Image 1 (cartoon, rainbow, N blue to C red):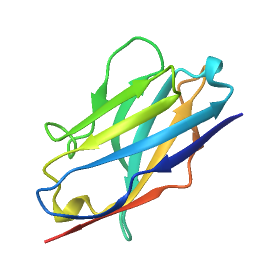
Image 2: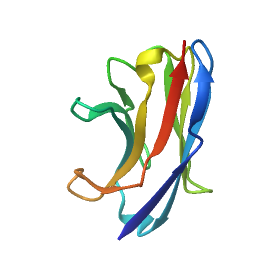
Image 3: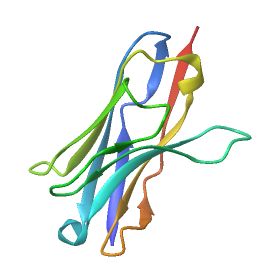
Length: 118
């Protein structure tokens, strides 16, 4: 089992920045990748970014490209999502997720809410 706990959400003005954190615990040595997703009412869950737990390529969703940066600190078992130039449409609940050998995101955190005001 893998446990994930997000933090760092809050209220920010448009154009501002936030950094989300995801503390990972449990069977981290079996993990292959972690990622961030977001949800808003009436919309499907949206992929934001993903990063391999060790080496490999980073991928971003269209909304995140050029503004968000995903990173990790394996020593601390933390995955970050740095969000810059935030827009009102970035308002959502953000979830951290982890995958094991099949690379499917099967473990999810409880989410952290980001609200961007105009």
